[in-house]
Image (tube, helix red, strand yellow):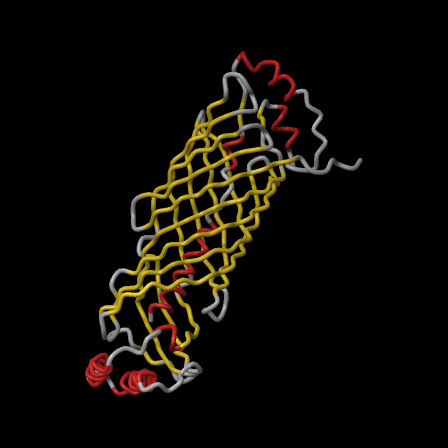
Length: 347
C-alpha cells in the first residue's frame, strides 16, 4: 500500500519539472536613467536582424533591452507536499478491482521529491516564451496506514519527466507580471501510463538595474503557484514490495479479523491478499504475485505562495532561486540559465 502511494507521489514529481518556468520579464529593462543614456541610444539605433523574437526590433526601438531569444536552463528542484486519496480499488494478479475506500484509512502521506531538469526555451514574441521540459529524479514517500493495520513505511521510486509550457509577460509601471502555464507528464516505473499534471503560476516582481553595468540586474518577486494532477492513477505493485517481510502470525490474525467485517466482494479480495501473505510467512515464494490498484487522488493544498530572486550577470548568464511557502507544500528551486541570439534572418 505504501508503494502505491509512492506511485501517486511521483505524480507530484511532475510539478517539480513543471516548476522550471521562465520568469521572462525579469530580463526586460527600459533605460530611462541618464547614466545609461549611451547604452539606451545604442539599443534604439540597433539594426535587429535576428528571426526571434518577432517584433524584437520594435521593442529595441522603444528602449527595451529584451532577453536573447534562445535559452537553456539547468534546474535542481526539491518539493515536500501532502496528498490525499479519496477512492481505492484493489485486485490481485489481473483480477477484478474492488472498492476498498471505506475500509482502508491513511494518515497524512508526505512525499519529498528531488528533480534535475533541462529546459530549452525560445522567446517567440517579446512577451511570449515557449519551452520544453526533460528530466529525471526520485520521490521518497512517507506513508502512514491506520487501518486495517498500523503501518509506517517509506518508499522511493525513480521517474522521468517531459512537458511543454508557455509564459506571458507584461509590465505596469515599475512592476512586471509573469503568468506561466505548463503540462508535464511523469513516467513512473510502477504506473501503467505517464501521469499528467497541470501547473500555473502568477508572479509580480521588480527589476533593479546595476549602477555600474547596464547588462547586470537583480530581480525579486512574489506570487502564487497552483498545481493539479490527474485524479486517477492505476498500476500494479509486486506483493513483496508492500510486505517486504511477511510479518508475524498475529499480523495475519489481525488481518483475518478485519476481513471478516468487510462486505462479500471486499472480503474475497482481502482474503486472497491475506492468503498470499500467509504463504509468504510459511516460506512459499510469492515473487510472482502482484496487487493491482486504482487510485482517485488529489493535492491536499493546490495553492501556495512563492518568493524568488534572479541575478543577471550579463545578457548570457542568469542565476535564479525560488522558495515555495505556506499551505501544505514547500519547494526550493535553483536555476542556471544561458541565453544566446541564434541565427540571423535571411534576406
